[in-house]
Amino acid sequence: MIRSSFVLLSVMSVMACNSNEAQKEKRGSDITLVTLDPGHFHAALVQKTMYPGVDSNVYVYAPEGPDLKLHLDRINAYNTRADQPTHWNEQVYTGTDFFQKMIAEKKGNIVVMAGNNQKKTEYIFKTVDAGMNVLADKPMVINSDGFELLKKAFTKAAENKVLLYDIMTERFEINTMLQREFSQAKKLFGELEKGTPDNPAVTKESVHYFYKFVSGNVLQRPSWFMDVMQQGEGIVDVTTHLVDLVQWESFPGQVLDYNKDVALISAKRWPTNMTLSQFNAITKQNAFPEYLKKDLINDSTLSVYSNGEINYKLRGVHAKVSVTWGYKAPEGTGDTHYSIMRGTRTNLIIKQGKEENYRPVLYIEPVGKKDADYEKDLNEALQTVEEKFPGIGVEKTAKGWRAVIPEKYNTGHEAHFGQVTESYLKYLKDGKLPDWEVPNMITKYYITTSALELAKKTSAK
Image (cartoon, rainbow, N blue to C red; front, side, top):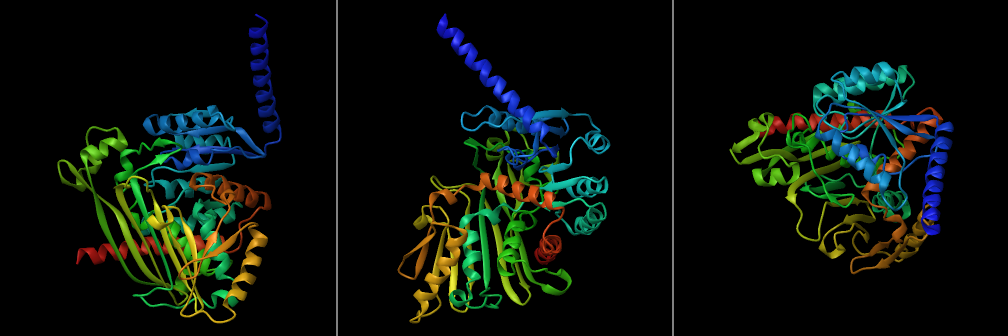
Protein backbone atom coordinates (compact mmCIF):
# COMPACT_ATOMS: atom_id res chain seq x y z
CA MET A 1 0.00 0.00 0.00
CA ILE A 2 2.83 2.35 0.94
CA ARG A 3 4.57 1.44 -2.34
CA SER A 4 1.41 2.17 -4.38
CA SER A 5 0.98 5.56 -2.71
CA PHE A 6 4.60 6.43 -3.50
CA VAL A 7 4.19 5.49 -7.15
CA LEU A 8 0.99 7.54 -7.40
CA LEU A 9 2.69 10.48 -5.72
CA SER A 10 5.64 10.20 -8.12
CA VAL A 11 3.37 10.09 -11.14
CA MET A 12 1.47 13.14 -9.89
CA SER A 13 4.75 14.96 -9.29
CA VAL A 14 5.94 14.22 -12.82
CA MET A 15 2.62 15.39 -14.24
CA ALA A 16 2.84 18.57 -12.18
CA CYS A 17 6.41 19.20 -13.33
CA ASN A 18 5.43 18.67 -16.95
CA SER A 19 2.47 21.00 -16.53
CA ASN A 20 4.63 23.64 -14.87
CA GLU A 21 7.22 23.35 -17.62
CA ALA A 22 4.53 23.72 -20.25
CA GLN A 23 3.09 26.78 -18.51
CA LYS A 24 6.54 28.26 -18.05
CA GLU A 25 7.25 27.69 -21.74
CA LYS A 26 3.95 29.28 -22.73
CA ARG A 27 4.53 32.37 -20.58
CA GLY A 28 7.91 32.91 -22.23
CA SER A 29 6.73 32.15 -25.75
CA ASP A 30 7.13 34.70 -28.51
CA ILE A 31 6.44 32.17 -31.26
CA THR A 32 3.40 30.02 -31.95
CA LEU A 33 3.42 27.46 -34.73
CA VAL A 34 0.62 26.83 -37.18
CA THR A 35 0.66 23.68 -39.31
CA LEU A 36 -1.17 23.81 -42.63
CA ASP A 37 -2.45 20.58 -44.23
CA PRO A 38 0.49 18.38 -43.12
CA GLY A 39 0.51 15.73 -45.85
CA HIS A 40 4.27 15.10 -45.73
CA PHE A 41 6.16 13.57 -42.79
CA HIS A 42 8.55 16.56 -42.86
CA ALA A 43 5.84 18.61 -41.12
CA ALA A 44 6.11 16.35 -38.07
CA LEU A 45 9.93 16.36 -38.12
CA VAL A 46 9.89 20.13 -37.49
CA GLN A 47 8.30 19.20 -34.14
CA LYS A 48 10.58 16.30 -33.24
CA THR A 49 12.14 18.58 -30.63
CA MET A 50 10.98 21.51 -28.49
CA TYR A 51 12.37 25.03 -28.94
CA PRO A 52 12.96 27.76 -26.33
CA GLY A 53 10.47 30.58 -26.73
CA VAL A 54 8.07 28.51 -28.85
CA ASP A 55 4.59 27.84 -27.47
CA SER A 56 3.76 24.18 -26.87
CA ASN A 57 0.30 24.80 -28.40
CA VAL A 58 0.30 24.22 -32.16
CA TYR A 59 -2.69 25.11 -34.32
CA VAL A 60 -3.35 22.64 -37.13
CA TYR A 61 -5.63 23.48 -40.08
CA ALA A 62 -6.25 20.57 -42.42
CA PRO A 63 -8.98 18.49 -44.04
CA GLU A 64 -10.05 15.37 -42.18
CA GLY A 65 -8.36 12.27 -43.57
CA PRO A 66 -5.39 9.88 -43.44
CA ASP A 67 -2.74 12.61 -43.97
CA LEU A 68 -3.86 14.43 -40.84
CA LYS A 69 -4.13 11.23 -38.81
CA LEU A 70 -0.59 10.16 -39.75
CA HIS A 71 0.72 13.59 -38.78
CA LEU A 72 -0.99 13.56 -35.38
CA ASP A 73 0.19 9.99 -34.76
CA ARG A 74 3.78 11.10 -35.38
CA ILE A 75 3.45 14.04 -32.99
CA ASN A 76 1.93 11.75 -30.38
CA ALA A 77 4.87 9.35 -30.80
CA TYR A 78 7.28 12.21 -30.06
CA ASN A 79 5.20 13.24 -27.03
CA THR A 80 5.16 9.73 -25.59
CA ARG A 81 8.67 8.50 -26.38
CA ALA A 82 10.84 7.49 -23.43
CA ASP A 83 13.87 9.59 -24.38
CA GLN A 84 13.35 13.37 -24.19
CA PRO A 85 9.62 13.39 -24.96
CA THR A 86 8.12 16.53 -26.44
CA HIS A 87 4.93 18.09 -25.06
CA TRP A 88 3.19 19.58 -28.08
CA ASN A 89 -0.51 20.28 -27.72
CA GLU A 90 -2.15 20.05 -31.14
CA GLN A 91 -5.26 22.21 -31.60
CA VAL A 92 -6.94 20.89 -34.75
CA TYR A 93 -9.49 22.46 -37.11
CA THR A 94 -10.79 20.25 -39.94
CA GLY A 95 -13.51 22.27 -41.66
CA THR A 96 -13.57 22.46 -45.44
CA ASP A 97 -12.65 26.14 -45.09
CA PHE A 98 -9.49 25.23 -43.16
CA PHE A 99 -7.22 27.60 -45.11
CA GLN A 100 -9.57 30.56 -44.89
CA LYS A 101 -10.04 29.82 -41.18
CA MET A 102 -6.28 29.84 -40.62
CA ILE A 103 -5.93 33.23 -42.31
CA ALA A 104 -8.89 34.69 -40.42
CA GLU A 105 -7.86 33.45 -36.97
CA LYS A 106 -4.09 34.03 -37.13
CA LYS A 107 -3.56 31.88 -34.05
CA GLY A 108 0.18 31.73 -34.66
CA ASN A 109 2.99 33.65 -36.34
CA ILE A 110 4.87 30.86 -38.17
CA VAL A 111 3.00 28.71 -40.67
CA VAL A 112 4.73 25.39 -41.39
CA MET A 113 3.87 23.98 -44.84
CA ALA A 114 4.89 20.45 -45.74
CA GLY A 115 2.39 18.55 -47.81
CA ASN A 116 0.70 18.42 -51.18
CA ASN A 117 2.56 20.83 -53.47
CA GLN A 118 -0.24 21.47 -55.95
CA LYS A 119 -1.56 24.50 -54.05
CA LYS A 120 1.52 25.23 -51.94
CA THR A 121 2.70 28.29 -53.89
CA GLU A 122 -0.79 29.79 -53.75
CA TYR A 123 -0.97 29.08 -50.02
CA ILE A 124 2.44 30.69 -49.54
CA PHE A 125 1.43 33.86 -51.36
CA LYS A 126 -1.86 34.26 -49.51
CA THR A 127 -0.25 33.52 -46.15
CA VAL A 128 2.51 36.12 -46.45
CA ASP A 129 -0.07 38.50 -47.91
CA ALA A 130 -1.96 38.08 -44.63
CA GLY A 131 1.18 39.03 -42.69
CA MET A 132 2.22 35.60 -41.44
CA ASN A 133 5.72 34.09 -41.61
CA VAL A 134 6.15 30.89 -43.61
CA LEU A 135 8.58 28.01 -43.10
CA ALA A 136 7.99 25.77 -46.11
CA ASP A 137 9.24 22.32 -47.02
CA LYS A 138 10.78 21.98 -50.45
CA PRO A 139 9.76 22.45 -53.13
CA MET A 140 7.99 25.79 -52.76
CA VAL A 141 7.07 25.63 -56.45
CA ILE A 142 6.78 22.81 -59.00
CA ASN A 143 6.29 24.58 -62.36
CA SER A 144 7.07 27.80 -64.22
CA ASP A 145 3.66 29.38 -63.59
CA GLY A 146 4.16 28.82 -59.90
CA PHE A 147 7.62 30.39 -60.13
CA GLU A 148 6.11 33.70 -61.19
CA LEU A 149 3.73 33.59 -58.21
CA LEU A 150 6.59 32.69 -55.87
CA LYS A 151 8.51 35.79 -56.94
CA LYS A 152 5.46 37.87 -56.07
CA ALA A 153 5.27 36.08 -52.71
CA PHE A 154 8.83 37.13 -51.85
CA THR A 155 7.98 40.73 -52.82
CA LYS A 156 4.85 40.61 -50.66
CA ALA A 157 6.78 39.10 -47.74
CA ALA A 158 9.24 42.00 -47.87
CA GLU A 159 6.39 44.54 -47.97
CA ASN A 160 4.73 42.93 -44.93
CA LYS A 161 8.02 42.42 -43.09
CA VAL A 162 7.55 38.66 -42.72
CA LEU A 163 10.05 35.91 -43.50
CA LEU A 164 9.47 33.30 -46.21
CA TYR A 165 12.01 30.49 -46.03
CA ASP A 166 12.40 26.93 -47.25
CA ILE A 167 13.74 23.96 -45.28
CA MET A 168 17.19 23.16 -46.65
CA THR A 169 18.24 20.32 -44.35
CA GLU A 170 21.22 19.17 -46.42
CA ARG A 171 23.22 22.24 -45.41
CA PHE A 172 23.48 20.62 -41.97
CA GLU A 173 24.95 17.28 -43.09
CA ILE A 174 28.47 17.28 -41.64
CA ASN A 175 30.31 15.99 -44.74
CA THR A 176 28.62 18.66 -46.86
CA MET A 177 29.57 21.35 -44.34
CA LEU A 178 33.17 20.13 -44.39
CA GLN A 179 33.25 20.01 -48.19
CA ARG A 180 32.23 23.67 -48.16
CA GLU A 181 34.80 24.58 -45.51
CA PHE A 182 37.72 22.86 -47.22
CA SER A 183 36.78 24.45 -50.56
CA GLN A 184 37.28 27.85 -48.94
CA ALA A 185 40.87 26.96 -47.98
CA LYS A 186 42.36 28.41 -51.17
CA LYS A 187 45.94 27.28 -50.55
CA LEU A 188 44.68 23.70 -50.35
CA PHE A 189 41.75 23.71 -52.78
CA GLY A 190 42.97 26.24 -55.31
CA GLU A 191 40.24 27.83 -57.42
CA LEU A 192 36.99 26.15 -58.36
CA GLU A 193 37.36 24.76 -61.88
CA LYS A 194 35.05 25.99 -64.62
CA GLY A 195 34.53 22.47 -65.96
CA THR A 196 32.73 21.38 -69.11
CA PRO A 197 29.33 19.83 -69.84
CA ASP A 198 30.98 16.40 -69.96
CA ASN A 199 33.12 17.00 -66.88
CA PRO A 200 31.37 19.54 -64.63
CA ALA A 201 33.23 21.34 -61.86
CA VAL A 202 30.46 20.49 -59.40
CA THR A 203 28.37 17.32 -59.52
CA LYS A 204 25.71 16.26 -57.03
CA GLU A 205 23.75 13.03 -57.35
CA SER A 206 21.03 11.79 -55.03
CA VAL A 207 19.45 8.33 -54.91
CA HIS A 208 16.15 7.85 -53.04
CA TYR A 209 13.63 5.10 -52.41
CA PHE A 210 9.85 5.13 -52.07
CA TYR A 211 9.92 2.37 -49.43
CA LYS A 212 11.88 3.63 -46.44
CA PHE A 213 11.96 3.85 -42.65
CA VAL A 214 11.31 7.11 -40.74
CA SER A 215 11.52 7.39 -36.95
CA GLY A 216 11.92 3.61 -36.80
CA ASN A 217 8.82 2.73 -38.82
CA VAL A 218 8.06 1.97 -42.46
CA LEU A 219 6.97 5.28 -43.96
CA GLN A 220 3.37 5.32 -45.12
CA ARG A 221 3.17 7.71 -48.06
CA PRO A 222 -0.01 9.42 -49.27
CA SER A 223 -1.23 8.22 -52.66
CA TRP A 224 -0.82 11.70 -54.12
CA PHE A 225 2.95 11.53 -53.48
CA MET A 226 3.17 9.47 -56.69
CA ASP A 227 1.19 12.07 -58.68
CA VAL A 228 3.60 14.56 -60.26
CA MET A 229 0.76 17.06 -60.60
CA GLN A 230 0.53 17.16 -56.80
CA GLN A 231 4.04 16.28 -55.58
CA GLY A 232 6.00 17.59 -58.56
CA GLU A 233 8.39 15.71 -60.80
CA GLY A 234 11.73 14.58 -59.41
CA ILE A 235 13.53 17.29 -61.37
CA VAL A 236 11.76 20.00 -59.32
CA ASP A 237 11.57 18.12 -56.03
CA VAL A 238 14.72 16.58 -54.52
CA THR A 239 16.93 18.47 -56.97
CA THR A 240 15.94 21.60 -55.02
CA HIS A 241 18.39 20.46 -52.33
CA LEU A 242 21.14 19.75 -54.85
CA VAL A 243 20.82 23.06 -56.69
CA ASP A 244 20.80 24.81 -53.31
CA LEU A 245 24.04 23.09 -52.29
CA VAL A 246 25.77 24.01 -55.55
CA GLN A 247 25.03 27.66 -54.80
CA TRP A 248 25.70 27.47 -51.05
CA GLU A 249 29.07 25.75 -51.46
CA SER A 250 30.37 27.32 -54.65
CA PHE A 251 29.42 30.93 -53.94
CA PRO A 252 28.95 31.16 -50.16
CA GLY A 253 27.37 34.38 -48.95
CA GLN A 254 27.10 35.80 -52.49
CA VAL A 255 23.96 37.18 -54.09
CA LEU A 256 23.02 35.36 -57.31
CA ASP A 257 20.86 36.78 -60.12
CA TYR A 258 19.13 34.17 -62.27
CA ASN A 259 18.85 36.62 -65.17
CA LYS A 260 22.62 37.07 -65.34
CA ASP A 261 24.26 34.12 -63.60
CA VAL A 262 22.39 31.05 -64.91
CA ALA A 263 22.65 29.31 -68.28
CA LEU A 264 20.75 26.04 -68.74
CA ILE A 265 22.52 23.56 -71.01
CA SER A 266 20.40 20.42 -70.92
CA ALA A 267 17.81 18.62 -68.82
CA LYS A 268 16.12 15.24 -68.92
CA ARG A 269 13.45 13.29 -67.06
CA TRP A 270 12.48 9.62 -66.88
CA PRO A 271 10.06 7.49 -64.88
CA THR A 272 10.24 4.86 -62.16
CA ASN A 273 7.69 2.09 -62.57
CA MET A 274 5.74 0.77 -59.58
CA THR A 275 3.43 -2.24 -59.40
CA LEU A 276 0.07 -2.16 -57.65
CA SER A 277 1.38 -4.43 -54.90
CA GLN A 278 4.33 -2.07 -54.32
CA PHE A 279 1.97 0.90 -54.31
CA ASN A 280 -0.19 -0.89 -51.73
CA ALA A 281 2.81 -1.60 -49.47
CA ILE A 282 3.62 2.09 -49.05
CA THR A 283 0.14 3.67 -49.24
CA LYS A 284 -2.12 0.90 -47.82
CA GLN A 285 -4.42 1.54 -50.80
CA ASN A 286 -5.77 -1.46 -52.72
CA ALA A 287 -6.25 0.39 -56.00
CA PHE A 288 -4.75 3.30 -57.89
CA PRO A 289 -6.88 6.42 -57.36
CA GLU A 290 -8.56 8.07 -60.31
CA TYR A 291 -6.02 10.90 -60.56
CA LEU A 292 -3.22 8.37 -61.19
CA LYS A 293 -5.00 6.64 -64.07
CA LYS A 294 -3.31 9.06 -66.49
CA ASP A 295 0.07 7.60 -65.46
CA LEU A 296 -0.73 3.90 -65.76
CA ILE A 297 1.20 1.79 -68.24
CA ASN A 298 -1.34 -0.97 -67.70
CA ASP A 299 -3.86 -1.80 -65.00
CA SER A 300 -1.18 -2.88 -62.54
CA THR A 301 1.86 -0.66 -63.27
CA LEU A 302 2.27 3.02 -62.44
CA SER A 303 4.81 5.25 -64.18
CA VAL A 304 6.14 8.05 -61.92
CA TYR A 305 8.37 10.78 -63.37
CA SER A 306 10.50 10.93 -60.26
CA ASN A 307 13.92 11.07 -61.95
CA GLY A 308 15.70 14.03 -63.48
CA GLU A 309 19.05 15.56 -64.42
CA ILE A 310 20.05 19.19 -64.95
CA ASN A 311 23.23 20.44 -66.63
CA TYR A 312 23.80 24.18 -66.30
CA LYS A 313 26.32 26.94 -65.76
CA LEU A 314 26.33 29.15 -62.68
CA ARG A 315 28.58 32.19 -63.08
CA GLY A 316 30.47 30.28 -65.73
CA VAL A 317 30.95 27.18 -63.57
CA HIS A 318 29.56 23.96 -65.07
CA ALA A 319 27.33 22.04 -62.64
CA LYS A 320 25.28 18.86 -62.88
CA VAL A 321 22.61 17.66 -60.46
CA SER A 322 20.57 14.48 -60.73
CA VAL A 323 18.04 12.55 -58.68
CA THR A 324 16.91 8.96 -59.14
CA TRP A 325 14.22 7.04 -57.27
CA GLY A 326 14.05 3.30 -56.85
CA TYR A 327 11.29 1.45 -55.10
CA LYS A 328 13.21 -0.17 -52.22
CA ALA A 329 16.87 -0.06 -51.29
CA PRO A 330 18.87 -3.30 -51.20
CA GLU A 331 19.21 -4.76 -47.71
CA GLY A 332 21.57 -2.74 -45.54
CA THR A 333 21.51 0.34 -47.78
CA GLY A 334 19.32 3.43 -48.06
CA ASP A 335 19.21 6.86 -49.66
CA THR A 336 22.67 7.84 -50.92
CA HIS A 337 24.48 11.00 -51.95
CA TYR A 338 27.47 11.62 -54.23
CA SER A 339 29.14 14.99 -54.62
CA ILE A 340 32.34 16.35 -56.09
CA MET A 341 33.81 19.84 -56.13
CA ARG A 342 36.80 20.05 -58.46
CA GLY A 343 39.47 22.59 -57.54
CA THR A 344 42.65 23.42 -59.41
CA ARG A 345 44.65 21.75 -56.61
CA THR A 346 42.23 19.44 -54.81
CA ASN A 347 39.10 17.44 -55.49
CA LEU A 348 36.61 17.22 -52.60
CA ILE A 349 34.46 14.12 -53.00
CA ILE A 350 31.58 12.77 -50.90
CA LYS A 351 30.81 9.09 -51.45
CA GLN A 352 28.23 6.88 -49.76
CA GLY A 353 28.67 3.46 -51.32
CA LYS A 354 29.50 -0.04 -50.20
CA GLU A 355 33.10 0.86 -49.33
CA GLU A 356 31.75 3.55 -46.97
CA ASN A 357 29.16 1.16 -45.44
CA TYR A 358 26.54 3.38 -47.07
CA ARG A 359 27.42 6.29 -44.80
CA PRO A 360 28.66 9.55 -46.37
CA VAL A 361 32.44 10.06 -46.29
CA LEU A 362 34.40 13.11 -47.48
CA TYR A 363 37.60 12.43 -49.43
CA ILE A 364 40.33 15.02 -49.99
CA GLU A 365 42.35 14.10 -53.09
CA PRO A 366 45.19 16.06 -54.74
CA VAL A 367 44.81 16.88 -58.42
CA GLY A 368 47.62 15.03 -60.14
CA LYS A 369 50.77 14.44 -58.13
CA LYS A 370 50.84 16.31 -54.83
CA ASP A 371 53.65 18.83 -54.39
CA ALA A 372 55.99 19.21 -51.40
CA ASP A 373 53.77 21.77 -49.64
CA TYR A 374 50.51 19.87 -50.03
CA GLU A 375 50.44 18.18 -46.61
CA LYS A 376 51.44 21.45 -44.91
CA ASP A 377 48.57 23.24 -46.63
CA LEU A 378 46.20 20.42 -45.69
CA ASN A 379 47.21 20.67 -42.02
CA GLU A 380 46.73 24.45 -42.08
CA ALA A 381 43.27 24.04 -43.60
CA LEU A 382 42.44 21.37 -41.03
CA GLN A 383 43.38 23.69 -38.18
CA THR A 384 40.97 26.31 -39.51
CA VAL A 385 38.21 23.73 -39.94
CA GLU A 386 38.78 22.46 -36.39
CA GLU A 387 38.07 25.93 -35.02
CA LYS A 388 34.47 25.49 -36.24
CA PHE A 389 34.28 21.72 -35.83
CA PRO A 390 36.49 20.58 -32.92
CA GLY A 391 37.70 17.00 -33.20
CA ILE A 392 37.63 16.75 -36.99
CA GLY A 393 40.65 14.90 -38.38
CA VAL A 394 41.94 13.23 -41.55
CA GLU A 395 43.54 9.88 -42.33
CA LYS A 396 45.51 8.78 -45.36
CA THR A 397 44.02 6.72 -48.18
CA ALA A 398 45.48 5.34 -51.39
CA LYS A 399 44.51 8.50 -53.31
CA GLY A 400 44.73 11.13 -50.58
CA TRP A 401 42.89 11.56 -47.31
CA ARG A 402 39.45 10.99 -45.84
CA ALA A 403 37.78 13.09 -43.16
CA VAL A 404 37.55 11.49 -39.72
CA ILE A 405 34.40 12.76 -38.05
CA PRO A 406 33.44 12.29 -34.38
CA GLU A 407 30.10 10.56 -34.02
CA LYS A 408 28.56 13.60 -32.30
CA TYR A 409 28.42 15.35 -35.69
CA ASN A 410 26.50 12.52 -37.39
CA THR A 411 23.13 13.71 -36.13
CA GLY A 412 21.12 12.19 -39.00
CA HIS A 413 18.65 13.60 -41.51
CA GLU A 414 15.71 13.81 -39.11
CA ALA A 415 17.64 16.00 -36.66
CA HIS A 416 18.47 18.47 -39.43
CA PHE A 417 14.86 19.69 -39.46
CA GLY A 418 15.32 20.95 -35.93
CA GLN A 419 18.57 22.66 -36.91
CA VAL A 420 16.91 24.44 -39.84
CA THR A 421 14.06 25.54 -37.55
CA GLU A 422 16.52 26.88 -34.96
CA SER A 423 18.24 28.93 -37.68
CA TYR A 424 14.89 30.26 -38.87
CA LEU A 425 13.93 31.25 -35.32
CA LYS A 426 17.18 33.19 -35.05
CA TYR A 427 16.41 34.99 -38.31
CA LEU A 428 12.98 35.91 -36.93
CA LYS A 429 14.59 37.30 -33.80
CA ASP A 430 16.98 39.33 -35.97
CA GLY A 431 14.05 40.47 -38.11
CA LYS A 432 15.63 39.46 -41.42
CA LEU A 433 17.20 36.72 -43.49
CA PRO A 434 20.80 36.99 -44.71
CA ASP A 435 20.89 39.33 -47.72
CA TRP A 436 21.72 36.51 -50.14
CA GLU A 437 19.01 34.05 -49.09
CA VAL A 438 15.99 35.45 -50.96
CA PRO A 439 17.67 36.14 -54.33
CA ASN A 440 19.34 32.73 -54.14
CA MET A 441 16.06 30.96 -53.37
CA ILE A 442 14.56 32.67 -56.41
CA THR A 443 17.56 31.61 -58.51
CA LYS A 444 17.26 28.04 -57.25
CA TYR A 445 13.60 27.72 -58.18
CA TYR A 446 14.21 29.36 -61.55
CA ILE A 447 16.73 26.62 -62.31
CA THR A 448 14.47 23.73 -61.28
CA THR A 449 11.28 24.98 -62.96
CA SER A 450 13.06 26.06 -66.16
CA ALA A 451 14.83 22.68 -66.29
CA LEU A 452 11.46 20.92 -66.10
CA GLU A 453 10.22 22.88 -69.09
CA LEU A 454 13.39 22.10 -71.03
CA ALA A 455 13.24 18.39 -70.11
CA LYS A 456 9.62 18.14 -71.27
CA LYS A 457 10.52 19.71 -74.61
CA THR A 458 13.48 17.37 -74.98
CA SER A 459 11.47 14.23 -74.17
CA ALA A 460 8.67 15.31 -76.55
CA LYS A 461 11.02 15.31 -79.56
